[in-house]
Amino acid sequence: MQGKFITIEGTEGVGKTTNIAFIQNWLSEKGVEFSSTREPGGTPLAEEIRSLLLTPRAETVCDTTELLLMFAGRAQHLNKVVVPALTMGKWIVCDRFTDATYAYQGFGRGMDQKLIAHLEQLVQKELRPDLTLILDIPVEIGLQRASQRSTPDRFEQEKVSFFHRVREGYLCRAAENSDRYVVIDASKALQDVQTAIRNALEDFYLKSQRKFN
Ligand code: T5A
Image 1 (tube, helix red, strand yellow):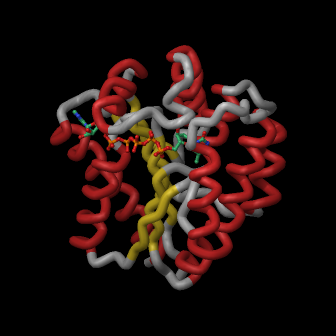
Image 2 (tube, rainbow, N blue to C red):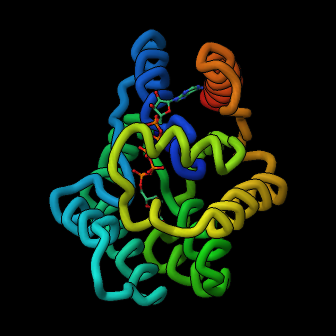
Image 3 (cartoon, helix red, strand yellow):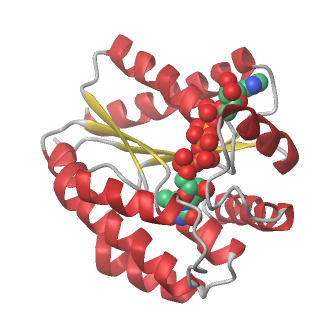
């Protein structure tokens, strides 16, 4: 049986890390075998690429370089971690995936969506997430939450207008394909956010059980 591929998305500081711990607990309670991973990153080589991408540097990173590095890491991550786990029937919980590329490089940087779609097809073939949770909050709240936690990485040094475009990108994608996406209001108290996440997961789990039976 093929495992399920769940991705968690959103702009900076929306609470992905906090809520992935909640999702892990929920899966354990259900007795689902799973692995958690992240992008960019997820293998030793892809984590090196992550470091190249996130470390602030004097040299400007060209948009095309950034895009290709994202997909280079993704190719490694999919081949070494994600596809083998799904093939074994494990579920994958991934902190960001290709929706982030559409939102950050597409909407944020203004790169051609068709070019991104071409690279997506090249690297992923038919593989797409089964469920994508988009944690959504006003950009300013997220940046404030993120700034309390660590020094800004290369993306977090972008102007606020960049993150407005990224947020719009996520919401556009969700509106275009409501089957796969669940948008969660992450500006609420953590308990309310996690109730909404639990409802989305229960719904998805029931549907996947029905398909299996
Ligand atoms: N990227 C990535 C691309 O440009 N293209 C791509 O294709 C991909 C895959 C990766 C960067 O790479 C870019 C996007 C990113 O800029 P990242 O580490 O994945 O970086 O992304 P970040 O958004 O930087 O992730 P963070 O770890 O910084 O934020 P989280 O995980 O969303 O937030 P979290 O859980 O650490 O929470 C932040 C703070 O808020 C509090 C938490 O306790 C924490 O202090 N909090 C709440 N406070 C009040 N109410 C709530 N409901 C709260 N939920 C959390």
